[in-house]
Image 1 (cartoon, one colour):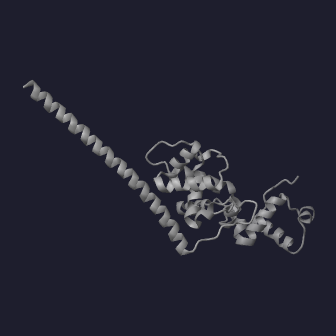
Image 2 (cartoon, helix red, strand yellow; image 1 turned 30 degrees about the vertical axis):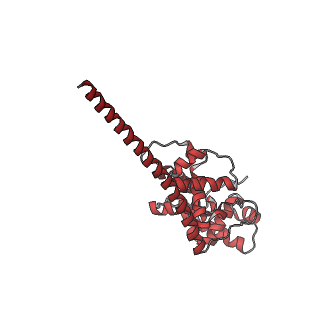
Image 3 (tube, one colour; image 1 turned 90 degrees about the vertical axis):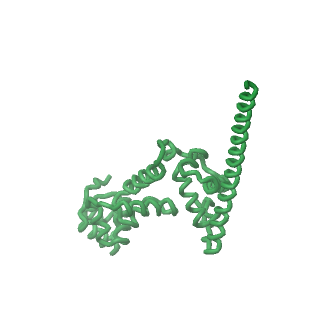
Length: 243
């Protein structure tokens, strides 16, 4: 078992150069003193390939990130199928858990204004949904105007899932909700006309919902006015009978 002692960026760069010249991982450990597990060395190697020496330096620094940068990273994770590991590697963020924490904090904060949160909405493990169930949930969100959190509570799925499905639907249309795990991704990116058609369809459904809701409110007000009018007539009749 490797000791996994820390190597300096310069030492790591030396091992990576030897590795690229044909020295095996086993030889690096036995002959050159490399003392980290193969999975960790592989991660260093991939970061070096992508960011050069800076990819090794970031592992030893106390990095700080702006709020905007964190939000952009979280949005990219939620809107794509890139794993947390690849996101961290892409932006040269040393720890995968750092990205995971940002995602948790962002999704908890996004919909908390105005009412008390229910933490289980953000942590629940929802049952696997079929393609049609995902479409129905997204349409419910778009048509009713509910928040991501309210939609998640209603359908007993996680906030992250609702957010991700809605964003994919907006970007790719219904095909964006096809489960592509384990097989070739079937999603065909929409052209501008198709995107506009999808947006108009969602807007139309939303307007129809609002029209129905407004009609119901209008009817309710008419009933209330009628009841008030009847009440006033009854009072007037009562006064006249007393006189």
